[in-house]
Image (tube, rainbow, N blue to C red; front, side, top):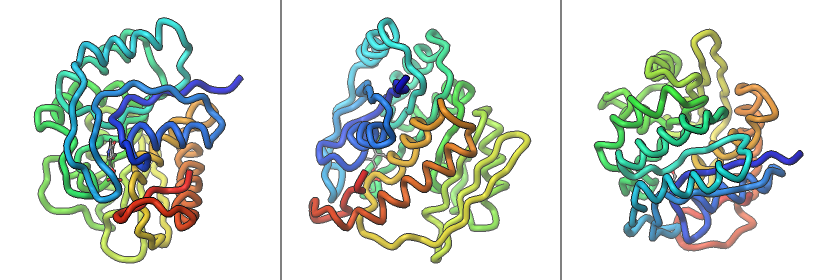
Length: 259
Ligand code: PLP
C-alpha cells in the first residue's frame, strides 16, 4: 500500500517552501500527501511579508479530523509559530501515539524574517522534542536550540549535534549548509551511532525551501527504511531537486526547487 504522510506546517503561496513544498515532495516520492495548516504566510521568492497564525484549538481540530479517519504512516512538522500551537501538536501526537515524526525546527526564513515566537522555542525543547524521531536543524536553528551565539564551525558539528541529542529526540541531523566554504558537512547521530555526509556545495540561487524539502523527503521515506538510509536517500532527492531547479523560471529572488 502507498504510505500516507502528513505535514503540519505553514504555507507558501509562491509554492517553493512550507506546506506546498512538503506536498510536492511527498508526491514526487510516491506517497499520499496530507496537510494541517498552522499559519498562512504571505511570501514569495523575495521574502516573507507577514503571516497569520491559526487558532491553536483549530490546529488540534484539523489533526483530529485526520487521525479519526486515516492511518498516518509518518508526520513532518514545520512552522509552528507559537507556544500554544506547539503544545496542541505535541498533545495530539501523543494522544494518537504517532511514530515516525520528523521536526524541521523552522525559525527564520532565508530572507531573515522570523517565523516563530520566542516562547515557542522553550515549548519545542521541553514538550515536543522527546516525541520526535529526527530533528533537522540548520546551524542558526541549532544555535537557538543550544542557546549559543557563535556560529558552529566545520569541526564542531558532531559535538554540537550530540549536545542537541540531550534534549531527547531520537536522532539529530545537524545540517551544515550555512558553513563557510565550498564543502558542506551534515552530521546525523543518535545515542550510539554517528554518520557524516560530506559533499561539495551546489551553487544555485534557487534554494528557497531546501530545508522543507529535505525534511519532507526524510518523512516520506521513513516508513520504508532506517533513519540513516532515509536521510541518505532524501539528500540524493534534494541534490537532484537543486540541480534541476534551473529549469524553472519562478520569481526574482531565491527561486524554488524542482521537485
Ligand atoms: N516559509 C515557510 C512556511 C516555511 O516553513 C519555511 C521553512 O523553513 C520557509 C518559509 C523558509 O524558506 P527558506 O528556504 O526560503 O528559508
